[in-house]
Each structure stands twice: as structure tokens, then as C-alpha cells.
Image 1 (spheres, rainbow, N blue to C red):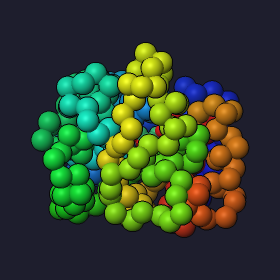
Image 2: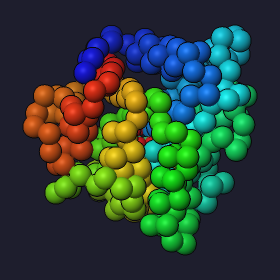
Image 3: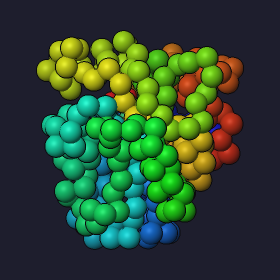
Length: 235
Ligand code: F6R
């Protein structure tokens, strides 16, 4: 596990973007696992710049997002579908059919999760997975639990997660969905490389627990200690 602290968010984001760009240049048909939330926004801005400068192309890249809220239509402004369109997909040359997110409105969530995992497998698995981390240690929306969930699944969001994400819903926690679909730990841990980015001192304590405490489902990100190729970038 490589752990690197940066003084500034912009510096960390640029470093992460260069790592993604290097992956794409080395393997133009890379399969990327992507995160949403506030942390990767500057990373996506930097990727857009690298694309605009002609240094990378997403023409043959495939993407799979970690999660999606249940009950929000794809066009809802706070759906992760919309987030990805706004921050990345609409600004690069990726093909729409190569971008994948789970359908948070699927009638049968368990079937939707199975379908999604089959799609990832058919794409050859994830080459590089970008992760953020929640204040409670969640990755994707794998919340603290009594066991690690290997399968992608529907999850009830913790109160602390809904509270943290209320800022995207005009500060109104009542508007934050109570559940989400998330990639499970098997998908995340099967990625050939993982980059976790974390911004802000308020996450230092949970990061410390995740990186040097016991590997346990109460701190979901601690499972990354068992991954052979992880970069932790934080500021
Ligand atoms: C989002 C995701 C979450 C976030 C985490 C941190 O796709 O998977 O695990 O990475 O909630 O969110 P921010 O970056 O907003 O602090």
C-alpha cells in the first residue's frame, strides 16, 4: 500500500488524474471504476483538461460507477448518473454505451446488482478503481456492518452518510434517499489497481483506522489493507 499525503487538494487531484491518464495511455481500452461525491470533482476536471489538450482519449475506455441512490431517476439532478454527465461524460469523447451505472429505480434491485456484476465481468473486470471514503469508513456505499458484503447489493444508508450528503440536496436531509445500490467488496477488491483519494482533516481519523487498524467490517475501507495494489492519496 502506497500512502501519500499532499498539502493541497488540487495537488492530490492532479496526481490522481495523472495516474488515471497513465493507465489510459498504457491501455487505451481500460476499464475504470469511478466514484462520485465532492472528492473526485477536481480529478475529473483535470482529466477533462488532459483530454482537451489531446493527451488522452476515452474513445475506447469503459467505466463502471460504484453506486447510485435508490429512487432517483437517472435525470434527477442529484442522481449519480447526472453527476457523471455533468462532471465528466459530457466533456470527453467517451461513448455513452461504454459508461455504466446501476439503475437506482430498478424494480428488482437484487437482479440489477447481478446484471451489473455480469457486465463488469464481461468487460474483463476493472483495471483501475477510484474510491473516496465516507466519514464512517464506507467505500462505495458499503456501510459499517457486522460482515463484509461481497456481492453488490442494496444498502440502507447510515444517518451520518445521509447527513454528510444533505449538502447536495439543499441541506435537507429529508430529501436524501434512504437507500442505494452499491458495488460489493468483491468487485472493488478484484480491481487490478485501486486509488483512494480523501480530502480534509475531518477524515484523517477514519483513514488512520482504515489503514493501520484491524481489518474489520465496522471500518469497511480497512479491507483495502488486503489489496495488493493500492494507492492512498490524501490531503
Ligand atoms: C460515491 C461513493 C462514496 C463517496 C464517499 C465520500 O460514489 O462511493 O463512497 O466516495 O461518500 O464522499 P465525498 O467525496 O463527498 O466526501
